[in-house]
Image 1 (cartoon, rainbow, N blue to C red):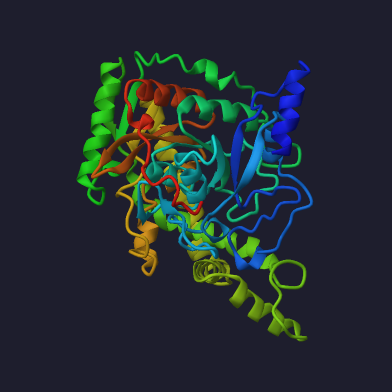
Image 2: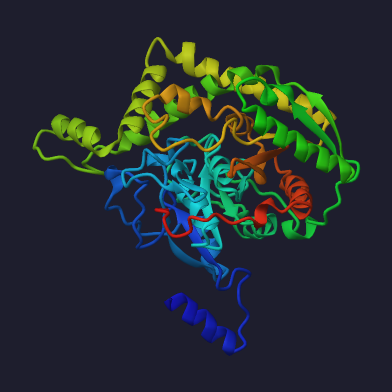
Length: 439
């Protein structure tokens, strides 16, 4: 409220305001905000208050955005449902008995029920696109290095990327204009010139070549979702694009490669939470007891599982057999995408292989949960960009379409998404459960 009053006062005085003046933005709880708790939805960091802002928050505040709150998430961004949060799950605004997706489920739900105009999430293997699909909003996973990760609490450094979640494609492009910039504090940040992303939203896709990866339309994906994706592709064809089938033959290895890499990096990153320097501290005077008890109590079961598996994959005698092999498979998947993009401008597939499922339905079966990431993790492995946009409803539950682009081709995928959005009404439909969401 204080920020809003300041912006109103400056406007009355005729001062030049930022591009996001007065816009309410919610922030995923793994992105540091000065003097505001940043917990990663974990008991381990339940009382952590950062003394600084992440680069993304700095850029939002500099453009006069109003940070209205932190959003719920899977603990340390490890999950696809927001059920692993220490604070409980975020409900899906279309059906409160179902999951909102994850790990940025709180951000997507907050935008869907209009608690915020826009939100910021992070995408390690689909964590922006999955909840965007499940909550019927727009979610962008930018190219690795386009948006600074300084101030993002690390899970898997080589995979994760901060991205916007909004109600429509224009807002997504506007938010990307603000947060996409080189940052000397982030060694993975890339210096690249880009035009105003909103100016590219002209609706013109005549001559565009769309590739449809057959592996992402295959068995394992709900047939009704495949049908909705094809309906969207046919609409884009009517708007002047052409399409053809393509293949990503090594994508069947994407899930095991992704989880080996992600868990290994998580094992390394989360080693710092020892109860002495960082994180929850258990009672005791012997270091080994404080360390082991603190991590057992401070971390939830999913985080502990990934740390254990990642530590195993990095251990002597198994490093080459697991972690190094996963890195080699990552290269093969990247090569598959490069070959596909030689023939096509963008690739299109369903964002998620299934509809939002019931809370509690899969949480006790980790392998079943991991399989829900089959359509999204490959984009993080190859380092490109992808956006999920609403493309229909099945039994009143949202369906998302994923538009995948080459690295730093955000202008093109946003233009395709905007053209589709302008010729459909899915994004205008609003959920009925607007006051029962714990985002």
